[in-house]
Image (tube, rainbow, N blue to C red; front, side, top):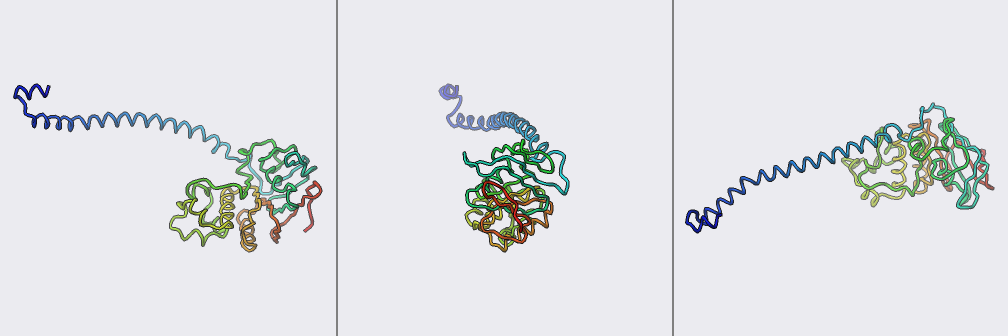
Length: 286
């Protein structure tokens, strides 16, 4: 059409170029508006999907929360009755009779490969067990990990941090500053302007093995567990700092049961020792 008008001398080339430019200016906002409306509609679909997903997840984080139903008394017990623990097909512990109470610090000792770590993992329901486990007189050996993982927390060097910031890994209802102080990391971390935004990859590159262990203990304490299982978590922490951490746990969480597996570790804060010997878990005098 424009070419015809030019040939008939009704329109110059310059007029046609100007007309096309003004036409584009006129319709470009309309085109963008149509695209924006389409984007909003698509976003609304994803918003509804996310809301539905969050509503679905609430049943795990609000109703369950890894807490055992009916709550706890301040004076509760942890008991393991009968049953065997195997390492593969090898019998490691049998006829188990174990008991401790709120506020106890229990150390499990024994030779390498005797089943110390497997015993902790049994309490956490990480491995199958054919005996009975009672926490506050409630049977938990028939529970799944996700049913108890807020009340019983297992800490191991094998459990890594997730990608992201410090606050993505260490969070809870307790002040993070108080917990960092408890695990002797105040001077190391509080120099930062915003500790919550610290990147975990940077932290792990610059922190020592002992400082990483302290962070993992801090992560567990933020859950205020009823039972804290520490699997060789003092192996790179000095004796002095280990005692400070245990003393801090006893003061901040006086009803928590702490069970420790640690080689060559001695502490006055340990109130009970069980030794695995000749396939039995035996309580020792201390």
